[in-house]
Structures are given as C-alpha cells and as structure tokens.
Image (cartoon, rainbow, N blue to C red; front, top):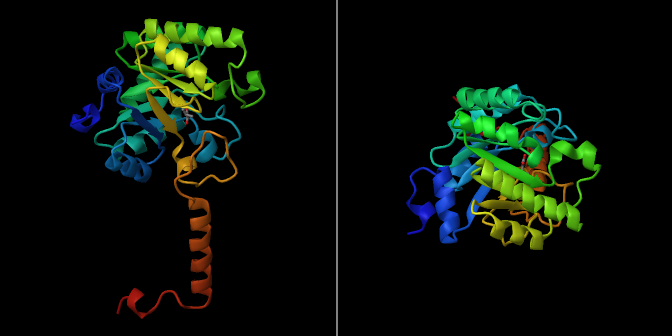
Length: 272
Ligand code: KIV
C-alpha cells in the first residue's frame, strides 16, 4: 500500500516520506466546513486554507486585504470538516513580514484559535528570521516562492516569475535557505517548469507546485478553480474538472422558473 494510503492522519512527516518514496502529494485549498469535508473524504493529502479566500470568498482583487482574524475564521471552519488531511493555514499579508515577534504571535494565534496543523508564508531570505522564530514554538512552516501574490504591488502583474537567470538563481538560493531554516515543504507558484525541476532536485523537502510543471513533489490548486466556480480566471496551468459556474447558473435559473410558474413546491414537496 502507498504511504498516503496507510496514513490515518497526514502529518508533515508523511509528506516527507511521500517525497522520499517518489509518491506525489495532493493539496487543494478550502475555506469552509462543507468544502473541506468533501476534500478530506475524497482522500486529499493536505488542505491549504489559502489567503486566496480574499479573492474567492471575499471578492477582493488581491490577497492583501484579508486579515488574521478572517484567516483564523476560515481555518476554524475547515478544521471542523477534516479527519485525515494535513491543514496548513496561510499567514496573511502584514502578519509576519519585517517583525519576527509579530510573526510568532500571529502563528501562535492561528494554531491556538483554529486548530490548523501548520502555517504557510510567502518569501525567501527576507522572511527567514520570521520562519526561524515561528519554528522555535514548534509550529511547522511551509514556504512559498515564485509568484507570491501578497507582493503583487511590487511585481505589478501575476505573470510567470523567475524567467530571468538572476531571479531564477535567487529562487534556488531562497529554496535552500527555507530548507536550512526548517520549512517542511515549499510551494512553487507560476515559475518555468525547468526551474521547478532544479529547485526540487536542490532541496530534500517536498516542493508543491501550482503552475510549476510536473517535476515537483506535489500539486496544489484553488478548489474554486478546479470545480469551475470561478470562470473568468483561465491560466494555462489550470485544469478544470467541473464547470460549476454554468451548472449552478442553470440550476438557479430553473429554480426561478419553477417558483414563478408554481411548479415548485409540488404536492410531494409539502407537509400535510
Ligand atoms: O492562497 C492560496 O490559494 C495559495 C495557493 C495559490 C498556493 O497560496
């Protein structure tokens, strides 16, 4: 049986064992109880309570506005729906950068108030001090390199990162720094596949890709994109497994028609 198949609970150690055995790691985002319950029951290895909640749940243009309290709320909802998967909660913008004490306090709040199993934060050398401090409290940390959406106002676009040699070299160095600091895994977002292959070979901890090709140790997607609840977002890396936006629109239109025509509720759908 596979390592993931044998695990009653997925831990950070399970992910490392999966990498060592060449078994791919599956990860998806979730932000609420109902969705988390489906992903967990389906057998997902890890759930990311992503700060993409800022976009897909709150309707913001970026991940910048979401607060620590809001991330904790989403993580609390997810935790209630999960028995087996590893739950990683994103640290939101402003909760860890440039101040390792604040970073530690934010991570402790996430762990204590939500019941998440680990935190994730974006960046390389510039956040290593925060990572090291969080780790002193025994909190597992996942890194995130490449396209780091919390820095959107620095990048100016959501296009592929590290195509140039200088940025690619820094990214590999950052990945090694994150590993040396003690991160248990690293998300690689929207970078050339060849670079992701190099990063994955350069570190011993698992790499989880999103728009980083197939030579990484696992994949992560935003659940709303996978099931097609979002429909205006169509990056090359995205494979949609459902088209729920159209399905739901159709269902709601049918409901409106049925109520207006008094077809709903019918005799079987009422109490006597
Ligand atoms: O917030 C998020 O959904 C993420 C993934 C894109 C990795 O960080």
